[in-house]
Image (cartoon, rainbow, N blue to C red; front, side, top):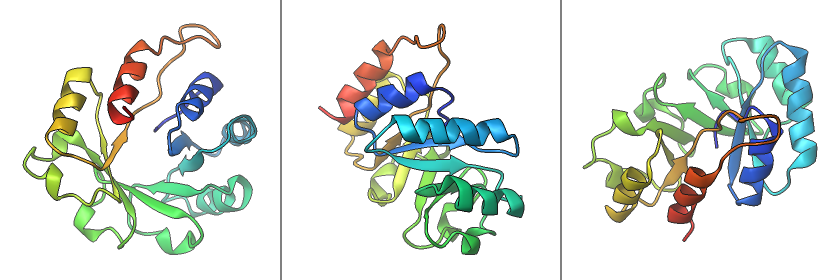
Length: 175
C-alpha cells in the first residue's frame, strides 16, 4: 500500500493483512505526528517512509525519529545513509537495472510490456497501477506472482470510505 493519508486506510489495510504500507513524511512536523499515530494504531504491517530523498536532513530525521522498516527512494544517491532499512525504488525515477541487488522495485504497470512481467523477480517487484478488477485478474491469470501495489484513497467523511472495490481487488490477490 502506498500513500496512506489517514487512519481509516491504515486500519483497513492492516486488517486485510497487507505486508507493507507507506506514508509521506516531510519537513512539516504534522507528518511525523501522523506517522507515530499510525504506528501506534496498526500492527503486523511494515511501515515505509516516502520522503524527498534528496533532502539529507529529512532522510536523517526519518531514520532517527520515524524508524521506518523501509524508505522509498526516487534516486540512487542517499541509500548508503539508510543501512538498516529495506530499500524501495520508484522506477518512474530510477532505472530498475541500476537498483541495488535485493532492493524492492515499484514498477508502474503502464511502463512495462505484458510480455516482461513474467521475467520480473517476484520477490522484489511490486507492480503499481490504478487497478480494476478485470485488469488485475488478467495480470494474475497471465502468471504474475510478484507484489501488487495499491494506493490509499480519500475518505468520504472522517472515518468513512467505501472499500468495495478494494475488497474485490484484495480477494484476487489473497483468494
